[in-house]
Length: 408
Image (cartoon, rainbow, N blue to C red; front, side):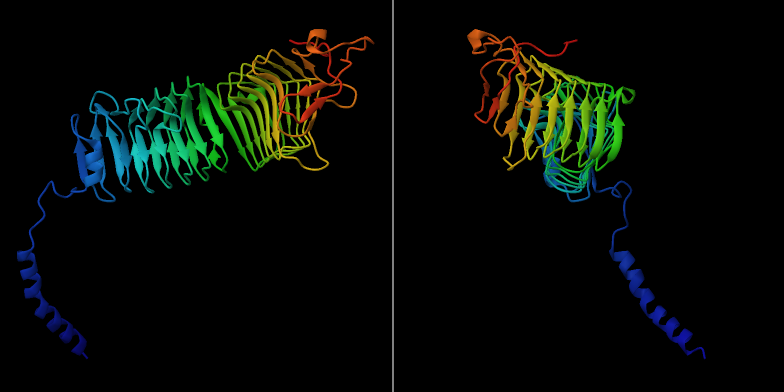
């Protein structure tokens, strides 16, 4: 009955000498080598050289100081800035390329000051990979962007600060990213976005105001009580955005694949795009004041059946810019807007649109006098001749000789 125990005992006794021999032959671990995967970089040493010599999973700790040149992380490792009493370590790109680039998946970058990147599409922190963690970093004084994700999915951005860049944080064709507690201020445009579904809550701020990023939401009102800094709606329905002052963003209001919504009575200035519609239809834009943007109102691709009326669009580079696809039987209706003193063009149409509602068009500051081609011999307040819209695909049959509503 005890045969198994006896056999087990014999087997164990037969291998004990081998275990003892194995322990004698192998060196005993020495204190200090337990973290052989950790490398410390001090000022004067080269971060890129340490990355190139590292292995996947290593930890590279960089002490306070300024490190000049470009850092390209090409392995899934942790690059951690350590404040040794003189602040976050700074990576200074010296005006050439991006300061820090994440080129491989699975990287953790934390505790750095990324600065002095040079060139459009370059950034203090440029992310061209996925499933990374970028936290507790500062991106400042970059010509281009502070932090920029390009075709980068599933990243976590937490507690980063971006200031004094062309744009603070940008996402371009990047999806399923999670952004929390990121701060942007004093950038020419704080938050840049182009395509993708992401989780971006109101803990992210632009100039002290929360960013509203609505993804597949419906039946919501964003008004002055929200104190919104900019509003993005991706795949939304029946959203009302009203009574806000929105500035210093890539877009004050950005509707992408959004329908049945209203943008009304907002003031939008100093944005790249005041109000932008991408693939968005059956929306109403009314009573908005847009000034000193690059584009006051911008419509793109399949943005059709929208109504733009009663908007005061002045002193932008372009007032209303229509760049939509031709869809038989469908068009945007643009009427009773004030288009005044926009620098390059009050109105521009690269796609079909109705620039009047059948009896009333828009007021154009460059088409309101006889010298401009506008005569009103019958005194009805409508130019006797239609206004051709620059771009070749628009005609206002009833341009007004003066605004039809008060300008506040």
